[in-house]
Image (cartoon, rainbow, N blue to C red):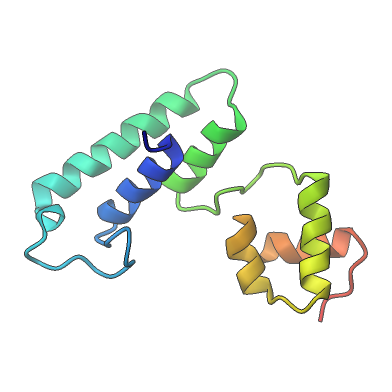
Length: 124
């Protein structure tokens, strides 16, 4: 069974008029390009996000889903693990660009730079 965050992210691409696999604009003949189908997908996304946001306690995976629905980076607002911090520092000092690190860690470019600075890493 597909994980909920992947399913929701797939639906988000479709709702935005994009093929979730190729990341290209849907063709006019694609069933997902039909206005009723797009609207149904948007309603489903909204209902899932509303249901999650009404919980009194959100698990990290719930926060990830809400971030995806709201068009934010997957891990926006979530704490950094020690392992991820070490990997980020090693990857950055090894020459990996911020844009790639942003995608790999599911964080915004600003978050990557801020976290590096917070950990005493000079920004190039």
